[in-house]
Length: 471
Figure 1 (cartoon, one colour):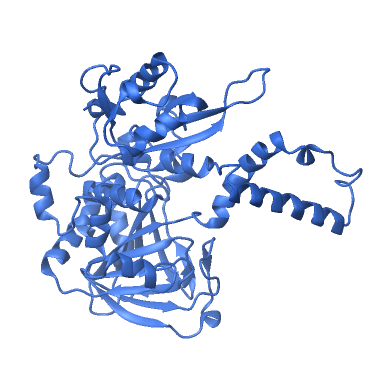
Figure 2: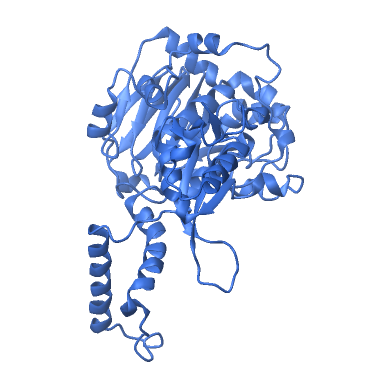
């Protein structure tokens, strides 16, 4: 993930007077007791099980509400009037926002160069009826950080966001479909939405679709402040602010990009083959002569590959091999939001040093992942597997979901952008690590390791990283 200049990203709430966690919880109609309770309150009155059985990846869901408390809360997440203060923080075109409009079925980008000037931005908005697309507002707005961090725990996938502010009788984007699952929260005003049958169900890429290809809408409705809309990736859609509505502001929460079974197979196959080649001499035998230079395919080669694949499937079904996802897990843990309002002092070692007679428990378990990967050491010996404990405690909220826009910043420490945050242990420590991550309280002396020194080394490493405490 990219880096981003810290000077341009400061929360609007940083200088506000402090408010207790209890007060913040009371003011919100959403329930933050757990990731699942948050999602349940977000889609209320729809039941979570019903949502995943009937709507998730299947069809759109429209929740129209008449709840003044929810409407007020939605508006507090982001509104047009926030832009003046945000522009004073050094926003840049393209990196932090786009100015665009749909003209004759095509997207017209109206960005200027460099820093965003608020007066010019409002001029484009008011006079040219341009849409303001604000990228990843959770970098600035604490409550969105709070919501998206919990949703990333719930989905086990990155959750990004954009805000779209569109003046009346205008449309920002032409008909298109996305490669993400989309939740729309209408924050201000009203938006006229039209949804169409997918041409590519569960699409893996973003694409525009011309009007002549998409046919008539399957859904045509008005989204009002406090309403929520969900639709699966691949759903063709377009939206405009109707006449008589001063402007519309909506928040798009998106998730499950590149999180399909196909993506998992691309991730696990290299390690699966690597492991299998150690024990299967057939996989280590050389290819037929000139196979790589042949212009034509061979049915014999296809049959041989099918035989290898069947052998891999049989070993998996019999439990002789494990699937090891590494790249997808590393990308998620290194790119996701850190825990809400976590400070540097919060991840310092807590309490006494653990001893053999102590009971210990893990901290921040929802922000820790365990992977098994080949050793990263360059040695003359055969490659060995190691256990990696990865965490997101030191991730930067300011760079969340910012892609390549961060890579041109030179004043960010190399340590802050390192893809590896965590610890590594010998593969023999894997059962003990799994036990710690799945249990509540465990006695150090009873961890499944041969030597007491290994048990102490394991818990001391985790304690020093701020991931474990005596409890």
